[in-house]
Length: 197
Image (tube, rainbow, N blue to C red; front, side):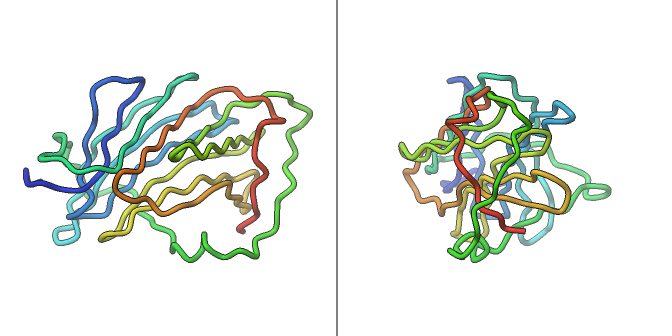
């Protein structure tokens, strides 16, 4: 990885030291993931270089209830030092077509919260626009990915097998600030997702 001025993401957990990830020389993928039934909540951040296919990991950590991540779309002189991954056995980086998230005809999805009044999930704040989402027994997550000059954030979930819903999706621009919080939220404060599969 080179030490030239680059565009990318600066990620801070609970106000700590930043992780800086360049997004110009490869496919960037940042995944915040929560699987309710298994009690798994984690963050993974990596970049796959376009020319070589080499894959680098910048973060892989468990997330605790109440953790807050601040993510800035910015420029910096050098990225954080990553760990180079062995290609063998690594899950390929997937990226959704942005058009999938721009189609306005998706129907609202009725979510069964199984009688629960509070659920663990995510709060996404993009420049003051706040969206909360959580599922009872399913999985939910926030993905930031890039290709060339395009950077996007998507907030989606899987209420059950072979179903997928979406709370939010947006292109990201330089200067944008995201705050992502994992916590327990009252069901009445959760947004209603749309069904996308």
